[in-house]
Image (cartoon, rainbow, N blue to C red):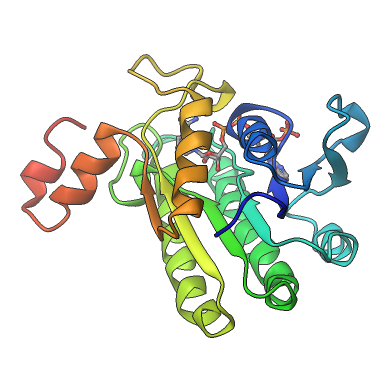
Length: 232
Ligand SMILES: NC(=O)c1ccc[n+]([C@@H]2O[C@H](COP(=O)([O-])OP(=O)(O)OC[C@H]3O[C@@H](n4cnc5c(N)ncnc54)[C@H](OP(=O)(O)O)[C@@H]3O)[C@@H](O)[C@H]2O)c1
């Protein structure tokens, strides 16, 4: 997949991994990068094209696909955490995680599927997680939403194969962003996630395993559960 000369769109592009992805796309020669954000009036980089997009708002999703009808790379990056622990607290936060991470990704992917088809296939990239494969005691709802998003990613890969769309799942452990600010564990930089995502696109890789922990967990999936959860 060529990045040079492409037109890309990144959701949740105003900070964290999304911001790093927009910068990496520009550095790799993308001709135009839509920064799809909830508040486009706060956009600061004149090299980006701001676009209003709350991924949970169906009208905004449809409008974005009408405006950005020249897109050949769509990156579903917008995501939230903050849901409750397993045994206490309101489930509202867990519902929100599903709404943004799973249904939001589904809505954006289906809205842009025909746009990608008219551009010759292009690429759909979903920002997943190590937690797509393993439960998390502290963030069970977030992990479940990322599992659901992984399944969705695989379904889109099967369905969009016919139109030649490369569907990429990016998996990583903790990244040094606002989302993981309260977590005291080793983290990788958002720029590393973005750069490895670019490498995955350039190599037509369906799966990008950014760090050691995501590679270890992926490899342990075929083993026993004790090994899979050994250091989690
Ligand atoms: N950080 C990690 O450890 C980690 C690890 C694995 C995977 N990921 C995944 O990477 C992605 C980016 O996470 P991050 O770490 O960069 O998080 P972040 O710094 O908290 O940024 C989240 C982004 O998502 C946007 N967003 C939230 N709800 C939205 C909605 N309804 N519509 C549109 N945009 C929305 C936010 O926009 P506002 O600024 O408007 O709130 C923000 O731009 C997420 O999918 C996350 O699950 C993160």
